[in-house]
Length: 200
Image (cartoon, rainbow, N blue to C red; front, top):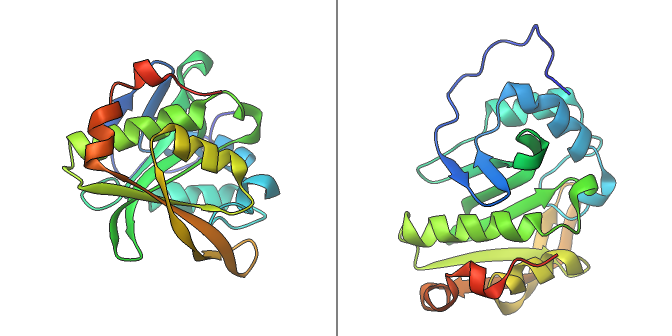
C-alpha cells in the first residue's frame, strides 16, 4: 500500500539506518502510514503492548510517524523487510522507562510472525545500544502471557529479572509483566550473533 498522495511531506528525513541480513531499520515515514495502520490494527498485537491503541487507524499511524523520535534519548525505528521492497513490517525501539535508560521494545505484524524477524531486529538494536550508545545494560519487559516475546528476549541473551506490573492501553489498566535485562558483559560474550543463530 502507499500513503495517500495528498499527505504533507515528512517533517524530518529518516536519519539513522541500521541494516541486518534481512531487514532495514529506519525512522518511519508518511509513505509507511497505511501499512503501519493495517498491521497495528490487530488485537493480537495491541494486547501485548503498553501504549498501542485499538482499534488503530490511519490517523493513529500518521500521529505515530509525525511524533516519532530518533535520538538522542529515544530511538524508534520502523522494521522494513528487504525481500518485500523494504516494506514496513513492525517497530523496534530503545527508550528510557521506569528509571532505566535503555529499554527495548518491539512488535511485528501478524503476517510476519514466526520468521525470526523480531529476534533479528532486537539483536540489531542491542548491538547499537552497546556499541554506539555505550549502554551499560539494556532492559525489556514482556506480558507474562506473551511466550513469543519471552523467547525472543532469551535468544538475545536477556536474563530474567523478576515480575511486576506494567501499563496496558488495550486492557485500560495494569497487567502482569516479566522483566528482563542484558548486561554489557553478557552481550560482549555473545555479540557474534551468527554463532548463536537467529531463531524462527
